[in-house]
Image (cartoon, rainbow, N blue to C red; front, side, top):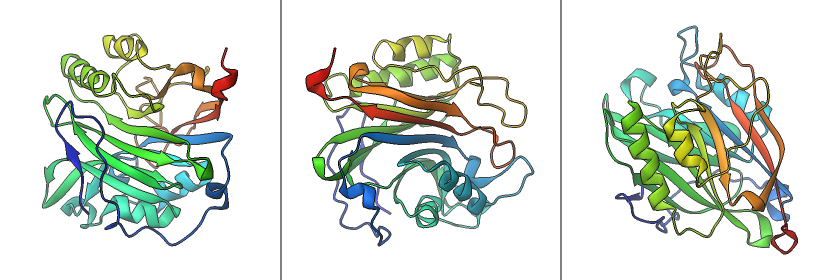
Length: 272
């Protein structure tokens, strides 16, 4: 699968998607104007559960049960030896009846390691934006997604920041620069490896709205959660309102818990 790449801080580039073999299906909701959108952020650790078993099908079951429209997945393998050479982004797209794109960080065990985005709606463009490098290369995997016949579009960016606080702050700064002048609504979703009171979150909160998850907000580790490091954030703040924002208790399938948000679109003419 070809990945359109852009060197930091290039703005999201249009990519030719004709080469993609998407599942031949039609979600009836995709043909309607959308009032809400459900987005899932989930680090699935290449399908390896807390029991040490690699089982991509059970990760797909969790995704289907949560009924997202768009999914940002972290720690995804493509043709890697440890996961039997499976193209995990494509396979998860097949298992969930969603379009898929993969963004690689680096070559690993004969394949590539990175992130994926899944969408029930058409992906009109995508880019794998290189961020300032640290212990490992990192990117922001961005997809421009058309929501129904209204022509309304959003940009969803998969995130997996790593490793030291200084490296993560530099990567977050790269994201700020990439989207500084973007007028399309932009949603960041994924594993930020940063606590709520960190400098990384303080920086991102200057540019994105980070809604609270509620009392049950801890996302890692999944069996005995101790830290909140996975987030979904959006901008502009007055373009959406939160219908639901939850962390789901799933202690087996991955070492992270899935985070989902449902956002209602606000009519721009009726903004306060």
